[in-house]
Amino acid sequence: MSEVQLSSEERRRFGALVADVWSDGDLAARYAAEPLAVLAERGIASAEPLEVPAAPVEEIDDEALGLLSTVGGLAPPCCSSATTIACIGSVMTAC
Image (tube, rainbow, N blue to C red; front, side, top):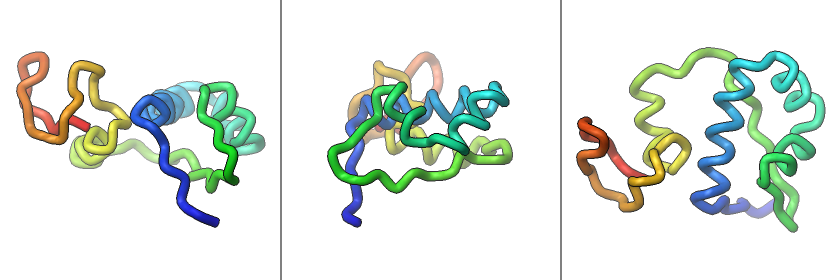
């Protein structure tokens, strides 16, 4: 199976889905049972088969959150380059 590349918007949607899964047990159960259906509902679909990652089961520390922002998972929409910039009063790495 080839690796499917998600767009910046799809990566943002997946990051939001992960956050929602952490706070909604019913959604977490649905994602575990029907991941492709939940991804499609969130606008993440592919003509090629998707290798669906499991939802994280433990909290992510600040360092890991920083790594997610570099791939677009949690970076705010104002950040659009791959450089370190000041955004809303703090320095962060943009996607």
